[in-house]
Amino acid sequence: MIRVQRYGEQAALVDVDRAEQVLGLQAALDDEPPPGTVEVVPAAKTLLIRFDPGLTSFERLSAEITRHSVADGLRGRGRQVTIPVRYDGDDVTEVARESELTEAEVIERHAAAEYTVAFCGFAPGFGYLTGLDPALRLPRRSVPRTRVPAGSVAIAGEYTAVYPRESPGGWRLLGRTDLPVWDVDRHPPNLLTPGTRIRFAPR
Image (cartoon, rainbow, N blue to C red; front, top):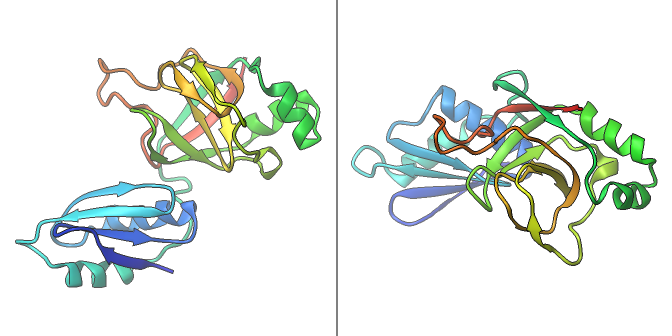
């Protein structure tokens, strides 16, 4: 179900039920953008759509949005990136214990899935990846770390992610990659843009 509400004078906020539906609606809007659309910004279960009030109105935009499908995902559409990972993270043992798996099974399940970047947030280049095996969906650490190294591959809730730079964080660390996911000298600097399909390759 799509719910659209005003977000100031030049934007609409669209709510859906699941992150996968955000990707589906974003794909539909990318293929057939409503007249007057300036920018579409995905988040966990919302899309912010900025529009030019000289070209359209909130009412017309809302009508255009609600006629689109919210079918899940962008499967097979986004480009694919393979990220090499050393699965030697500090939380592998803890994740195995809490998920009632062996450490080898944790690594196997994490690496077996295909992920999709649903949205970006927290820090530049920090992509929230959907597709995590349900057995690995654990809450964040009760006590966040003050320092998580750049390149750390981690899980929290229904998402997995790669820390683009050193920062505090409460996600569970499974491993680390040397592949830079954020590089200001690259165009675009963000490797993990929404819709990108991700595979993790154990090293």
